[in-house]
Amino acid sequence: EAQVTQNPRYLITVTGKKLTVTCSQNMNHEYMSWYRQDPGLGLRQIYYSMNVEVTDKGDVPEGYKVSRKEKRNFPLILESPSPNQTSLYFCASSLARAGDEQYFGPGTRLTVT
Amino acid sequence: GESVGLHLPTLSVQEGDNSIINCAYSNSASDYFIWYKQESGKGPQFIIDIRSNMDKRQGQRVTVLLNKTVKHLSLQIAATQPGDSAVYFCAENISGNQFYFGTGTSLTVIP
Image 1 (cartoon, rainbow over the protein chains, first blue to last red):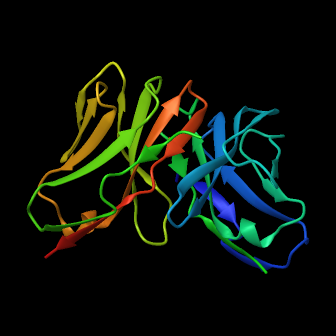
Image 2: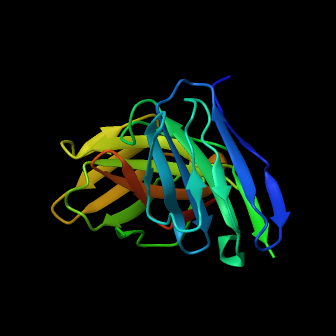
């Protein structure tokens, strides 16, 4: 089944404790992206990747890092999480570019206390 | 950032009626638009897209209209069903790399 998976689905952590949210897609997509979703603000793009070893900042990249060492994986790293990073995070992928249909993962709900 | 907004945050329609969800965008350089549906507890799901060289596109029970003159996008759902109850987002794409999403409209279908 073609899908985007994220882990963990739920995470509660404390300020400053490094964490990684994994994202994997099995569709051989080149483009992958991370979004955060907050009430009243909709989805905002954090980082995106056009292909392996190619990443770029989205609208709200501060406090996040990403890597794209393999085509299928695009982990989101929070080196020192803060409470304002409490949010619902979605990973997405598309075939070749952001202009193609994006497939979204199920989401990761992160709480930073 | 870009401004992509929706005219109405909530919409209630009777089952069987048609629904129209509106979206305004601010960047005239946007060349690709997508409508997504998000059900509670799930990620956004692609519904239909349209490129800026078109003004109308139809799918199964859905139609997207693009008015570039006033920078307005709409999603029409025919014969709305209870399963259509969800939050609907429009998104605009500029230069193929970044997406900007609206805040969403919550559609409730009354049986």
